[in-house]
Length: 315
Image (cartoon, rainbow, N blue to C red):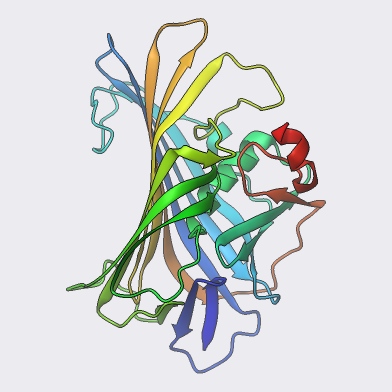
């Protein structure tokens, strides 16, 4: 049985004989790790870790997923380590951060051939939480059309991703792998451009943040709103994405480096963000996905609300 995992991009062949009456259910593991390091004078960092599950089902229209989050857990702590790429040991109390734990409301993701198109959410969702959802589900988006991929390809395109639309260098590499990253014998993943067993494809996305339309000065969980005054100034100096696919694995992530400061203070803080999504399982769904309550269409771009109002917000 063949099922659509990510519309227009990734399918899966299930090694089962029966047809699942309610279709498949996909579970993605979500990890968000943020490290804040002051510029000088402080020899330590503050860490924020979020773990969650993203549960999705494909809709019958063929271009959408119906999703919700489960089991979100977020905490923060101070650490001595200044290396954001390494795990850190807390130097004090570990504090739960419920404001970063995503609620379990149902929402829908609509795709086009480039990636994310728009979202359907509850109209009462808070803008801050909507932006966190956008950042996470944005890992399911390629951002460009990948037609006729050869063995090794590099090309430039305007990538539509949740923080804007930026001039991006796509580097696509196919190579043999000795073993699977994770063992999942129940299905075989099939990207639209084809992938043979025993091979790995990596899609790197290197964004030129100085060549963007609708670029947003955002960091994960920021409570700032474009409709209000803010004393925080932020600027992203780096944003790179990657997607790794084998016949049994799908992993997608983004790394951001952002500098922030307050107008009233001289301290500059560097934020290192890593957002990661990994396909964990494909199982038969127990029922049809519920409808989105008080549904409203919203743009994929962080900081925007209703699609119909996007031109007003740009102004």
